Amino acid sequence: MKLYDINHLIIDDDFASEEYVTVDFTHNHKEYSITFKKADLEIMNSWVFQDGTSLPADLSVDLIESIREDVKKKI
Image 1 (cartoon, rainbow, N blue to C red):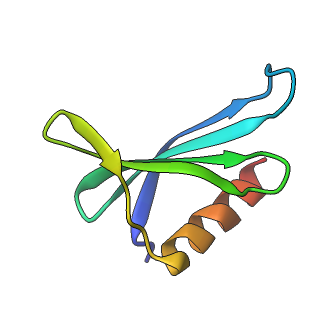
Image 2 (tube, rainbow, N blue to C red):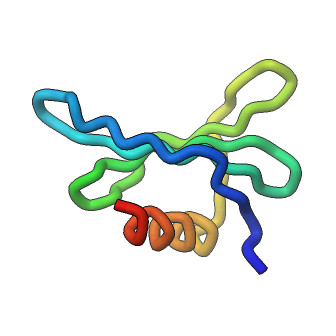
């Protein structure tokens, strides 16, 4: 069983210099968003949304790698 559910996957490929993939997901009853560079899936930023505010997210390496593998399969 996965520890998260991907809600949205957005591939931004209209930028002149870089392409990005943004993944919105739920983990432990909280909403998160991670943006990766499409070329190598390096993390650009990650956010947790709570109480109407977005804060930098502190996610485990294992969770990030699992999400990264899911993204590879989808793109």
